[in-house]
Length: 183
Image 1 (cartoon, rainbow, N blue to C red):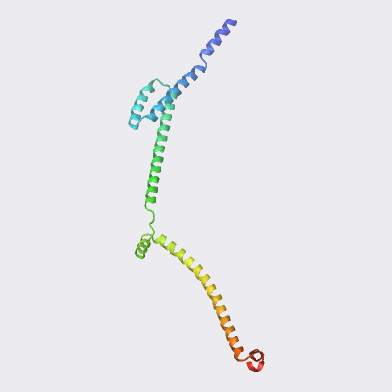
Image 2: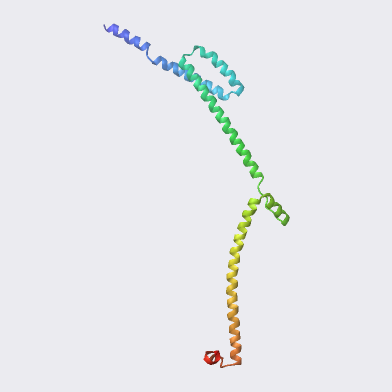
């Protein structure tokens, strides 16, 4: 009886999934080599590789064929996305280079200023608004200073007049305080 059990164990090992694992590993290695070749290959060689793949499909089972098709579709899709994104990056780089090369040249004379304002009206309006704001700030500061100077000047003139008046009329202080003078 022990011999029969040993024979059954040997049969079980022959039908185990271990053999499939080796087949899967071989298939994975083959697919990785194919991927390396495709990544290094040019687009025209890709079509040749697809026709060669279709010849190899005849000896593959259904699961392996669907896996291979899905893998190829995913690879093709990722390459299309990559090329699309690379095109976008190139377009943005080109646009950036154009915008940096066409930087605004600031005017130096009256004629250049009017031409510049005509060429960049939005920027000219912004600059003008900022200039007006700064000018108003400075003007208000000057007005405060002039007002204080005017008050000082009036006080000085009044004091001079009072001094002259006291020289001419030493009793001016008494007269100024009296009600009779004001009436």
